[in-house]
Structure formats: C-alpha cells, structure tokens
Amino acid sequence: MHPLLQVEKLDISFTQDEEKTRAVKEISFRLEQGEMMALVGESGSGKSVTALSFLQLLPQQAGISGNIFFSSDGKEQVNLAKAGIPEMEKIRGNKIAMIFQEPMTSLNPVFTCGNQVMESLRLHQHLSKAAARQRTIELFTQVELPDPTAMLTRYPHELSGGQKQRVMIAMAISCNPALLIADEPTTALDVSVQKHILQLVKKLQLKYNMGVLLITHDLGLVAEVADSIAVMYKGELVETGPATQILSNPQNPYTQALLACRPAANSKGHRLPQVADFLSGDEPPRNDLRLPHTAKI
Ligand code: ADP
Ligand code: MG
Image (cartoon, rainbow, N blue to C red; front, side, top):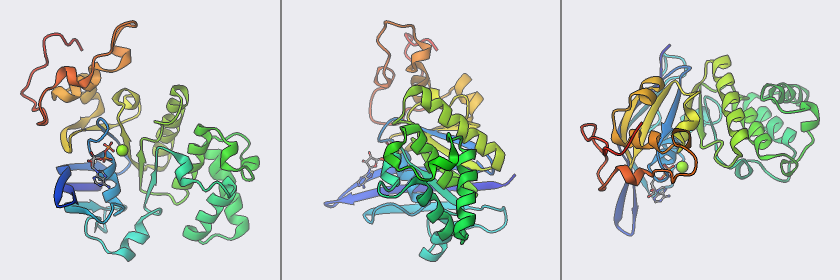
C-alpha cells in the first residue's frame, strides 16, 4: 500500500469583479492505494471544486496553491497542482477517472451506449474495433447491466438513471484507473438505486484495488462503504479519520450535526433537525465546542 494522493495545504479561490472568494481553505489529507474515502459536506462546502482541481478542470478564474501529489505505482509522483498539459492528458481518463451526478451530461444522446464506451477504449487503449466491442460487453457485465450485448445498441434515453450511471462507471473503469473520483454519483437517483450503485462501486474498488474519492452531501449513505471519511465545512476540512471512528465517535460539532440530521436517527413524524440547529456563526466549528444539550446521538 502506498499513498495515492497527498493533498497539502490546497487552497482554491475565485476572483470575480475584483472580489475574491476562497472556496477551499488550505486543506490537507491523504488517500491510500485501494482506499475509499468519502468527502462529505453540505452543498457549497467546496467538494466539487476540490475534485476538479485534481484533474485541472477548474475554470480559468480559479487561483490554486498547495500541492496534490499523485502516485499510481508508489514510485513516480506527479504534482497535479503544477503538472503541464501533456502530463495531465496522460493522467485524465487514464490513471484518474471521474463520474458525475448527472450521467446525461457526460453521455452523448446521439450515440449508442456501446459506441461511446468502444470509442473511449479505442482512443485510450488503442484497441481494434472487435476487441473494443468484446471489452465493452465484459465491462457492461462487470457493472451488472442487464443483457450486456443488447445494451451495446441502446441509446442513453432508453436507459433508466441507474443504468446510465452504470454505463458511466463502465467507461470510467475501462482504463483501470488507480483513482476513481465519483462526485455525487447517486444524488439524482432513487433511494433504492443509490444503494445498489454504491455497492457496485465498492465491489469494483475491492476487485481492482482502486482508490475511490466518493463525494456526497449524505453522510448516512456512505456509512456502509467508506473506509475513511473527510468532512468539509465552508471550504475547510474539519475532521478526517477512519469511517468507523467518525461514525461512532465524531469529534467535530459539524460532523455530529450531520449524523444527527440523518432520518434513520430520528423517529417518524418529527421535523428533522437541521445543521443550522447545531451551529451558529460563519466560522468552521472547532472540536472543543460542545453540542447543544438537546442533541441526542
Ligand atoms: P460543493 O461541491 O461542496 O457543493 P463546490 O465545490 O461546487 O461545492 O463550490 C464551493 C464554492 O466555490 C461555492 O460556494 C462557490 O462559491 C464557489 N465556486 C464554485 N465554482 C465557482 C465558479 N466557477 N466561479 C466562482 N465561484 C465558484
Ligand atoms: Mg458539488
């Protein structure tokens, strides 16, 4: 096992009309080879911006400082915060793959699902047409799509939301990435489908010893699959650690609030508590703050 990602004092800000907004504030964390880390926090906390910076996909007005050391083999190391375009092209969709919340924004509606995966295989892996077709059927089988051969000729609009996300996952793992970044991959899906998709990602993580950065606003959802959890609040990383530790003994009031706001922790018929019920002020909560006495976790 070796560190796949070492993020050091990553800071990201956007400047618009001479006004600077800091979206990510000097965050540091480490992701090991084959580890699944959930990056959790409410909307706007800086999760997507963090992930996009790893692939240098931030818009031009973004300013970035700090280091993002990435090593797929434990030997060669690239600083993703500073790498040049040729280096990034070798990494994107090859050593690091990414899937997003809405698969329709990534799938092209005018091409069949088979075509899109085959095209990607031919481009990145230089496979022949026949080999790409065979490999696509294998990939569709691995992501547990029904009737993988028939799926080749289906258009994205003919698939359910969960099936489309499975096609995206097939495309993402087609290059055997060392790191898969999944940004809210199940947020647009029904609750029952969400679980199946996460179970699939977990299965693939273990099978390929792939590092996974699973981004979500839903701490409850990742409890069963994440090895470690990093909690973000207003651009800061307020707590990181093994999933079991964070879920059973959260130290930061914001993490405690996220856990208390999960429906499962509350009886039916009562208004769910909100994070705002637990926190006040704009500053990230410190670990020495205590929960209000009303909170039972
Ligand atoms: P999350 O994924 O946690 O919901 P984001 O990473 O998308 O949050 O955004 C974090 C913050 O970064 C937002 O609150 C927003 O202020 C800022 N931000 C994101 N993208 C841009 C952009 N293109 N231009 C300016 N500000 C942005
Ligand atoms: Mg986001």
